[in-house]
Image (cartoon, rainbow, N blue to C red; front, side, top):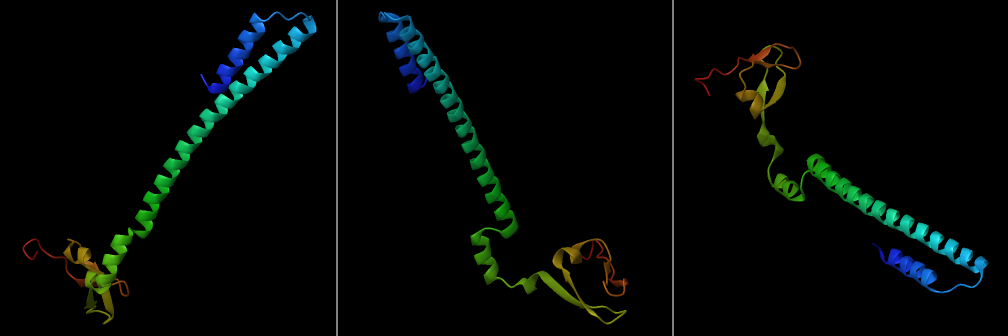
Length: 133
């Protein structure tokens, strides 16, 4: 029970315990107490809704942080990436068919599939056999 609900209950107890001589005054006090009670209920509902919204916003911030880390990486990763050269991840190969220089990453070189030239669509080099790995 909230603080406001306790105060309204106290007022209701006072109104019930005190002799009110006028019937009009009794109706007025009863109506005021009922109005205060309804307002206290609405405040309690709003506080619960605000708490739920706060939790949702916190979850959204966490999800956005995760998404930002996924898209842009951590700052520590960026600092480490600056030290390393991006050229180390790719191998330059001249296509024997069209003589164009093409680049393949390490994973493509280690795969069991043929490397295909993006310019002439011909195999640049045959797939690595398990003995060659």
